[in-house]
Image (tube, rainbow, N blue to C red):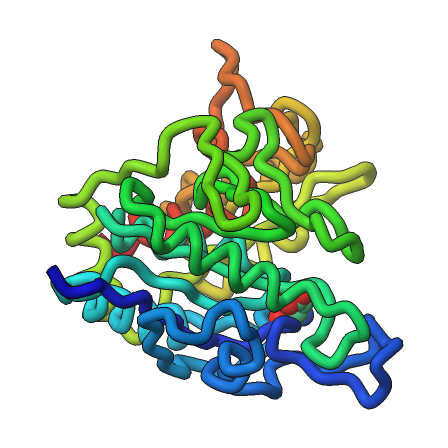
Length: 312
Ligand code: ASP
């Protein structure tokens, strides 16, 4: 049997970033080095059946729906090839969790799709990108692996749970209460729990919907906080927003003034979802709730889920 290949799709990020000085880990420009060049510089990856494709080249803080649409289409293309074992996607850390969630929702892949990133630019004295890429390729090569995951600092996170939790440390991601899926240690995967499973039919419908539209339905995030008002919600409704995710306090509580504006938005036909602004935990429903909750999704992921629902 011929050896199956890993396709590495480049989208940019700090992993492809450059700085003018090797000791500068923050004053760099993301998305400067092509994905083929990144791989060519890693001796451990030479001789492996890798194919590269540059899908985008951007700082992931500037991620767009157009890039997601293209990325989803390219992933679907490669995942359908019998000779492809899995995919690796190089990505910035800032919106990595959103891309991971989006791709799992529209692909629910039976093969591994592994997001790789870095906290230091490629020009750093000790860049973390090369090891993260080696780890990501090893996860993609792991035969039972499936679903969209992220690999950073030797930790494997599932798309549903992964969240950037640190601004600077190399181990910048967490999986909250769920914990990581596993670890990559010297090339070997040590699994703690199951790989992400998805609803293949729902994903197929979502992918078709994404291909049909040119823009995501407008869904915005507002935050509940001390002295919050309903001004932003009223402005969004006037602008024609179709969905609002509220990053609520604690267990989904919302400031009275903001809550009233959200009630009025709902009455006007806007979909409203409550997520929590807490880094951990989920909104637990209570009998008196009148605003739906996000079923454990963080505000940014709840926004994507709602936009996909509105596309259907
Ligand atoms: N701003 C960068 C990005 O998300 C940060 C990183 O990759 O660490 O593309």
